[in-house]
Image 1: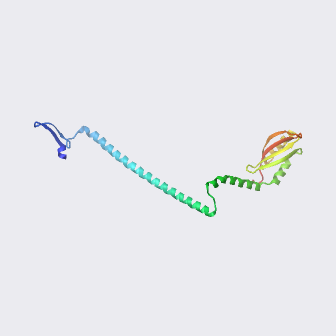
Image 2: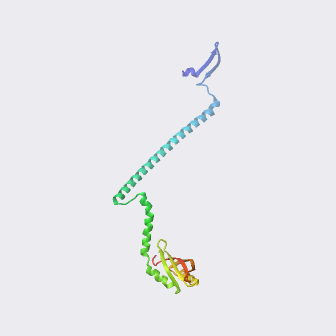
Image 3: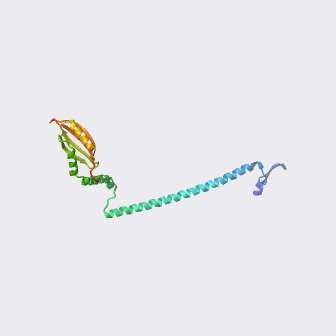
Length: 199
């Protein structure tokens, strides 16, 4: 069959009209096309090999990631089991309540370290004789002091604010609302920061 296809001739009445030699005839003008086809096939083979190599590397990385995830999940299960054995709640609800519990603990610590005696004695030194302090409230979270009081004149309230501003323990006094009350005294609100010794 190969020999028959390689040498094919069409005859009519004993005459040869054309004769094809597919296996032996060399066509010089097709050499660039054959070279280009060979280079293309080689590049296609290299590209296929590179693609298969990339697929293999990606698959290997996925397997390693899956192994690490399984290991972390196993550690999580061990941690949860150990916490449950110790009576520790690691549920989502417990984590949602954690910031409020931390805030409460910080407030309790601030109240324990706050000395009302030291604060009131320092404040008493600065209050002029004609100013009456009616209420003092501590905000432990921000160490702010809220005071309400009354004075005979506005100038005395201004003098109190300036005295607090220059004191080394009291900082940033801010005078809030002030108005004349029914008893004729100037009622005022004052906010300041308190820095106790050692804090």
